[in-house]
Image (cartoon, rainbow, N blue to C red):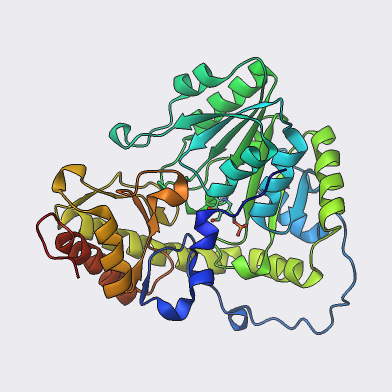
Length: 374
Ligand SMILES: Cc1ncc(COP(=O)(O)O)c(C=O)c1O
């Protein structure tokens, strides 16, 4: 493995300092939940190692979400990032071929790169509405393809795969004898309601998700891998045991308590997210420098500065960051042109989002050719 740090992490607000940011539109989750909101008494917990697969009651709740999924099909991990790392390192070697959707959350690209395997991109294009095309995917799959890696709802575009898209991708994996990984970290945030767990479609499918994004609990680092494939389950558990044996018992308990109250906790989060989405939609419709593909899920969108508008993109980011103390996720975090930027609308307060969106317009206007750059 050849590790290197990714720009999305080096330039993240945690590294830059939250105190230096006025309007933070970089985040890809909803607002972080204070522990007090869960009103938990954890004092009776014995701080022991836990079940290596994960707290059984937590696995039961997760399994209940997928038809034909049993609690033993679930491996709880320290976040979706760790789950994705386990899947990639368990399945891929240097000689293997992988097809991965692009752009993407950086880890989905970086871990296969660090392994050194042959990576083919299933490129989503703005002109095509970032649309998933099963024929394009099929054309990229080769006899030596080991893994297809998709994400829905997608980060950074906020587009989604339909149930039929997932079924077609699962059929393709079955026909080629490869595996289908679906990063479902934003599954609960599909505007049309969650698609079936990919792992429920075929033993060739692997679902990955976590408590970070929809519940605003990234600080507990709880995610999971679900697959019906017994051989893969054994390999994933072996990887988990070698990396961290088991999860933090405190984190698992918090995740379990939060998930047990899903019916109460999730609707207000989704409603707040919907209001954030409406604000971005109104902003996009009320100006002429930025354009977008309207998202259909998740908590982010991926607009771009219209190339023909004559905006000096580097000056734009400089003005946005230095003058307006406003931050977005620039395109290069996702291996894309810097005209693109990820805008997260679920994390900031309504007033921060409103001000941040206005600042995007102001910075772009000021960075147009011929304007003086401050
Ligand atoms: C698509 C996707 N997958 C996985 C992750 C990792 O989430 P976590 O490790 O916090 O569970 C992220 C975080 O941004 C993401 O956007």
